[in-house]
Image (cartoon, rainbow, N blue to C red; front, side, top):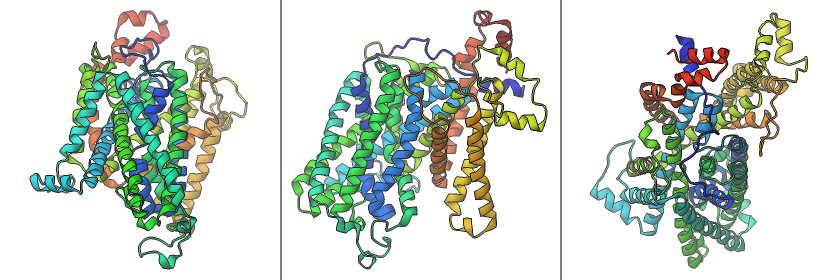
Length: 596
């Protein structure tokens, strides 16, 4: 019974390239780059740079963005390879379904829904706060008096303006992907022009003296001055926060059924988007901290404040107007992938099938889009910006982790069309010495088998466990590592285990797929991505984990009471005509999978 359940949970999607799509292929490379930049370049550049500089990293915030960009680029490389492998809607959900199995895919898809819902709601709330700040906070004060909400874990007032923004974007996305993409491109161009205005005008007023402020002139509570007022630890803590600024490029990967030539254009769009976004963040954070002392930044709206301070009110209003358009673009980009993930999961039958209905006129998943808007609008209505941002990262980081693991699994996965390799291996390697030779492939075996694939899979699982242990020690016991033997031994053992497991994976015979884009330096790059992502996940607070677990429980109830019985993959396994087309050995295996 337990074995049958395991086989059902790990059944994989087998027709990722065979089925036709009802959605229109109308997005070219420019559209995809515009979507990636537009969905990412929002709150990060207009709010995050100032707030992180003020209280976390100081002028070294530009280095925090660099570290966050490296972590995002590593994840982006893994996304790019999978986009060239699996040109379907659904992003990491489909990738994990093809490689890891149905249950892992559901968990990832469910958390991607959380990511995009929270992302849309947080940008809507940020846009509402930005407009409210320009209006002298009259909207906030009025709503607080009209409908106060005195609940600790909710906002102080219902933000009807943010709700209205989400509903407006929902209506726009319902009209059609090409129309919404055109508007997104226009807003993205305005966004980039605003960033250029900041860089050019800000550089005129920039001076390096604000990077060398002595500690005697720094207010109490704002570090020690200089370029690293909060030390290297501040740079790393800032990187964890700045990572939020790069969340969104994976929206490009959800357009597999609407992109022209997805195997080529999606990987290119991901990497080009990340380069543009990093250049904008690095330049803006550099100029911002050279125009005004880091401790004198405005955490909510840094640009209007700093340009007002230097006596340029015209630039202030130009930048403020551009910021409003940028946040609109970011909200559009954040919500764009949400109905597509829901559509992909519903089409596979693991969530409610009616959500996969595509409107004949607009060629969009209309029911999924409407549900996405209502859910995102409700979240924006009752939660404030800080709460939304805290809830967002965990789903993203888990998705990035599974994608990186899936890259390794596929690179070392046995070719199922060679069953003789599986039969040959079972009689070998019965003692410890031979097992050691096999694990490190000292015989220089060049052809992957079921056994070498299994060694790789177990190695990456154990690698993830030791990565989590090492990250926990670094985060929670930085100082005692070199003073207390318990932490020191844990640190050394965990670090040594990571290098050994990396060597074990690298020694296994790999499969060389013919793809338009492949991650270089496998398994090093994907393993680095796993480390970065798990480290940042453990940086999240307890309340974020509690909310995440509650969301996950709801999803698991849906899967076990609906999805597991209505899965399209499960239905195919139960169809006799499908089984007859298989050879007898595979047919017997498929029949056993259906016995739950």
